[in-house]
Length: 111
Length: 115
Image 1 (spheres, each protein chain N blue to C red):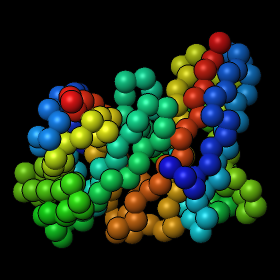
Image 2: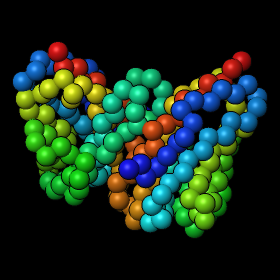
Image 3: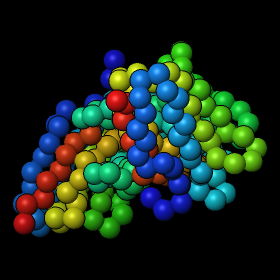
């Protein structure tokens, strides 16, 4: 019973173009959403978050969009760089409790 | 990932032995979380602790696994009588408090291999 889904296991994008990573959730009680990036042999690194009172949050090249009615969020990376190649995890929590992580999407940015 | 320290980075155990994984949270953080990642899978929540208290252990296997976060010293995840299926990467995360806008910060993990 996956509460947080990332239906694309992998994504390849040309350097300089936009990367769009998608995440869907089923629990309507989730009120805080985050994206983490993970390189091999390292722990996840926090990228950006959004609370359910917003529909967009931007930080440099990274923008997260939240569509509560569709229970969907996405991470946009513009422009994509080769160093962005990593596994990206979507995570969600309700009332500040423990996070539920998606299975991850492996992003490859091609030079 | 600077700040949350996990050791050892790699741990090899034979079936039936005990594994102890340590986690020192970031300075000023009093909340610790343990996650397990199996190959090609996402992170699965195991347990959430505050100093001297287990807050949520809903993700912990009922047997052989235990966790503590004493008043002094690191948090410990203990696995008794390890089996092959315990082979995984175990990640610890910490946060200063729960609530909105409090991301968890992760260590680099302990990779446990069971022979």
